[in-house]
Each structure stands twice: as C-alpha cells, then as structure tokens.
Image 1 (tube, rainbow, N blue to C red):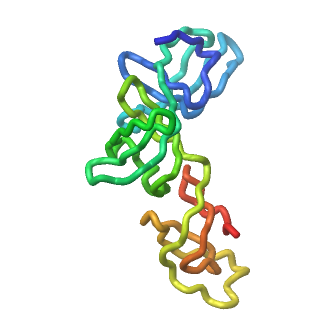
Image 2: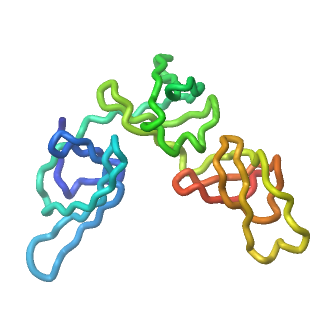
Image 3: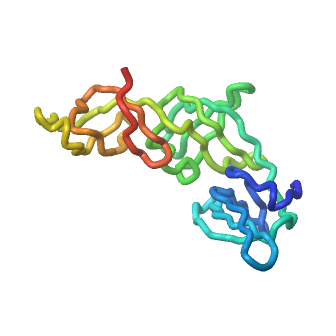
Length: 188
C-alpha cells in the first residue's frame, strides 16, 4: 500500500478506504468562498460496482491500492468465466462474469484488453474506448429515411443490442463506444 495526497488523485486511481477498494471515476478540486480547498470525487466500488460521492479535504493522505494493470488476450468463455492469457508470461486466468461486467458485450475472442489485478484477484477489465464489431442482425432500412436521423435496434456479433442509424445493414462493421454502447460510425 502506498500513501498519496488527495491532490494527486486521477481517474482510474484505486484507493483502499477502510479495507474496501474504490476506483476514482471523477474528481474536481473545489475552493469554496470561505474555508479550505476540497476534492470532490465519485468513487466506484471495485467489486460491487456501487458508486458513491465522497469529498476529501485538500492535501489529506489516503491509501492507494497496489493495482497491477496487465495487457491480456481474451481467449474464450468457459461457462464459469472468461479466460484471459497474459501476453508476456502466457499464464491463463479465468475471470468471473461479475468482474468482467458489461465489457463482455464488446469482447471478441483473441481481443486485447487491460486487466487490473490486486494481488492475484482480478478487479476489472479496461477495454479501448471503442471497438469494431459486425452487425449480426438488423431490420432492413427504408429508402428515403437517411435524413431523418432515426435509429433502429441492431444486434452485434457479441449479442449486445444497440441503436444504429436506419441505413446500417446486417453484415456491416461499425465502431461502438465501449463506455455507453453507442454507435460511432461505419468502418470501411
């Protein structure tokens, strides 16, 4: 465990508060009219996903958890969990579905991802901000609907359903934002 100042918090920093691991998802330094500067944060519980707001006084020491981020390759889903291989040591680990969370909706076999580990315990999966996936099914679009800005549901090759513009067809490759599942454009 390392001690850091609340002035040094960054998005992605994992804190050990009362034996619980919390990841900083948002922070802001705030100077009220009177009094000392404070640091407002949104913290996400690493294991449960619960999000809380917490305010710290400026320059207070907090415990940061030792989190090892490793590039790993997603191999396959074995029913119990998702099997990843460390790209440097070739060690394989199975990560439970609860830990993988919504990342499973954007992962294809052999794709690279960053796995955050605390000791030997996988904490969460970091995917790139966007991924390219194929549309496995969507209703045909209607001619003349290109300018209305309308959307329709489409199923990605991973099984996730998202909304896409009406002109997108089955079999096309698109770019998808992994943070909110939104359509970002066609891939040519």
